[in-house]
Image (cartoon, rainbow, N blue to C red; front, side, top):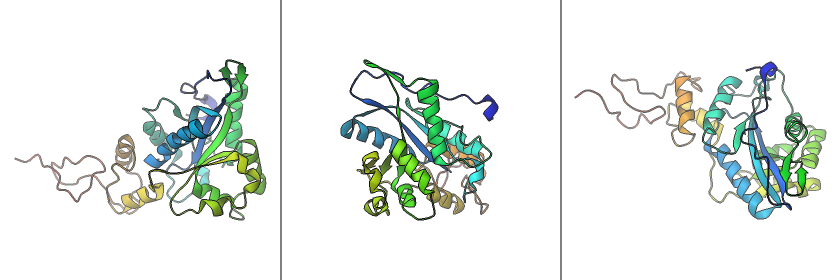
Length: 271
């Protein structure tokens, strides 16, 4: 796919809500997703529960937006692979979609521009969402881990104008992550506190893409840390094996499944 034949994916976007006093909300997770993990997916579910019980928003959809290859981050495999892995990961979801628009650009796009893209496609092109009181524009909000908000508080990482633009016009749903002091991360962002929603992790999960890549380099199992179709895709395309390790079985007749630990003797076809 290229930008020339790109169309905005909206088949999973709910186009109508029945509660007139609620504001439709679309959650946008921007990131490398190299690879996508269960924590990335779990953040959407946590944010939807939080919005339902603690806000006046009603979630009508969500999107994963992969950064392009120009981001040049360590461990970043080609955008084509990351888009494919994200698509496999949400294949069974009824409301989370993958939008390849950002990743299809040759140049790096700031997060503010990506959120503008979603606002344009959902609220201007599609016309928002129908409600009992007429059409409403969707609130577009950034979904991220607390480590991202921490980078917003670090001088020189984000442009001040981008932080202001994102938090004033869109807002953010932030999931607490172990190792990040959320109060410290928010200390310099108090001006926008009404647009920042902090979600507590009731079940602690510190899976990260960095750890998945490390396990692959060390020839360790990644099963049950990322969705099974993603495990299979990683194995099939030999991704994240910078040290030349391969986590598939190498012996004749080895029937281990992709990603399984070599610490367990694989069943042999020999009698």
